Length: 238
Image (cartoon, rainbow, N blue to C red; front, side, top):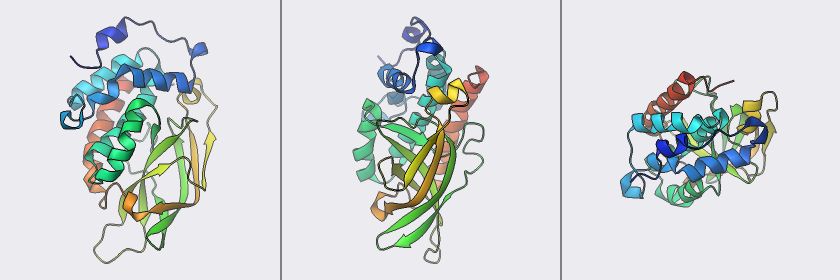
């Protein structure tokens, strides 16, 4: 039996907006077991199809729209990790995302989606790493106990023939990473949305999720579009 059963979710009353907060909604998403639908069976998950993941997300979000967008962000980071060729990073970070030790955020806003490439962060090369500089707008799921941000970075210069756009996963505790939280609407406040400012954030070369952006771009785009379509169809964005 799957860990996530939307029939059980339908039996649970919706969460009143006045009683909801980002951390409570985040733990509600974790407790549902929905994230394990994305994880392949070989890695201990349910290995559900994209359509099944999106439909289950729609049912989960019926309890609270903001929980749907928290799950959207967390789910995309989980997808990136299970698709990443960097096994060491996956084995380190994925368990924390599944048990709620860390939140997962993506660097593009729901209104845009990955189909329209987010403005990449710029990287300045160092010895065995880089300093990252830039700004990310409308980033969901910046939970205060700790989070990681899935972010494409533009690397200049690079060796001839090497891809310039690559994927990174930034940790909230890194020096130079600052969040300005959005308080303008209930949904964005409850989904822990804000802008991220990167000022000389150090990133090690062995923590790259993928050397070539296209390695993750295709599977992320497919899942992103399916999940956003499910949430938009339910009018779950305010």
